[in-house]
Image 1 (cartoon, rainbow, N blue to C red):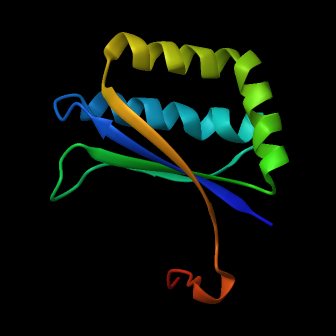
Image 2 (image 1 turned 90 degrees about the vertical axis):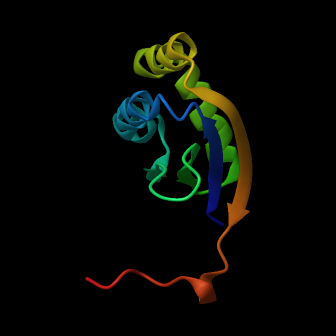
Length: 109
């Protein structure tokens, strides 16, 4: 059973470039630590301060193992410190979701 960690961020709307930099760092860190990064999504239109990150894992146990590896990863620690120092994340919420396979549709190629 694949689970997806759905992260919702409330951002400082004047620091979106810092969030993009933060997200770009995770593109290398997350796979190295055992997660499957589906992507980060930044504001475009409408609300200008909500962003999302989606990371999938084969199981909740794999997520827990990922968290343990992430705690010792130098790049992960540096990225967390960058976020704390720059203070562009105002709020962060996490939900764990399971795909309903019959509803999944791939984008046309």
